[in-house]
Length: 376
Ligand SMILES: Cc1cc2nc3c(=O)[nH]c(=O)nc-3n(C[C@H](O)[C@H](O)[C@H](O)COP(=O)(O)OP(=O)(O)OC[C@H]3O[C@@H](n4cnc5c(N)ncnc54)[C@H](O)[C@@H]3O)c2cc1C
Image (cartoon, rainbow, N blue to C red; front, side, top):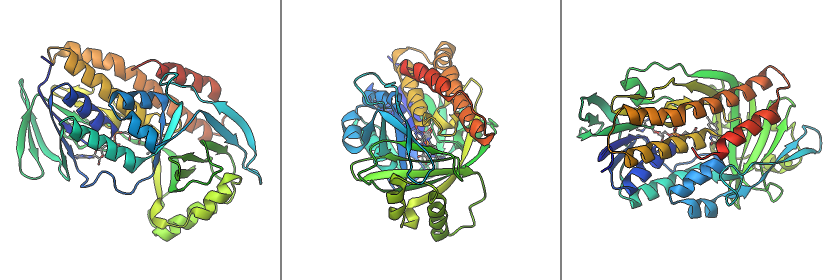
């Protein structure tokens, strides 16, 4: 008998769907509520590192991920010169194991859709366009009221509702989410044949310009600048700003720039960071993924950390007989330090660039690769 028989998961991102799939596959009754009416609406791309791919395989979606995404094992470093010269080609560590690629680009909407489909397939009751509005727990369960007026009682509630988590606030937890001082322009579009891996251009007028193939026909490209208030720009002005910033970058960027024509495909956001000190649970409600820890995507590990939280939590909930302090101690022992290390490394990489400091990037990347190569 697992430690729980009924669970509510709030949020259908990587952490939420991952938790829901593993629990339901083990026979737990799982409700999953997602505030957005549609999970696969327009979105950008995501870089999934090997350790994220390992967890996606455990969720039973690896074949679909492999078919939809674009795998690569080397990251290129290019100069912001008139030719976009390649200055280094760095083999990426296969952190998910030798039988998985080092990294893979995926369109975010496609990843979201296939995870929600998998959740439905294993018996999760998915309710889109719905959220929880009240939580009240006692010693034996959590009473929840939903936005459609319905109610439910669960053994456990999992708050997987992202950076600005409603669940976190409902628990009365104050966590400051800090801007790290960088903003990122991202655009989703067609993949030129010359883009077969992630290339990063350091320097020039922006901190980083890069791209990642996300499928045979698609990629996402990005430019990282000082965080600034871009909220007053119209979509057309946003597109024009990203195009203008990209003019300092050449090689494949020349072709990508030619395809930057759809304002709806351009998006701007700030890099943010926070880390909730353990414990991440209050009684029978626990926070996972970005709700508990978030970081700038300088090593593209946020998705992997969210998936790992999900897998470890589900493993403990289904492998133990009681939802007790021992279970929470085991969860935090496996998750807190690992997430903290990733958040701090990601923050350091951003800070070195902001300060124009030559940090020891190879050694930091090696230590993260060693850490994430170990199963969570
Ligand atoms: C610019 C940028 C680029 C990034 N690039 C990468 C990358 O390349 N690789 C990588 O691994 N990571 C990347 N990340 C980080 C990654 O996106 C996150 O770490 C990851 O998505 C976290 O997953 P999550 O499930 O915890 O949260 P989310 O993905 O945010 O999912 C939370 C879900 O909860 C829903 N929700 C919110 N509030 C409620 C509510 N009240 N009720 C119900 N549902 C709710 C949301 O709609 C959402 O679907 C990037 C982050 C940023 C900001």
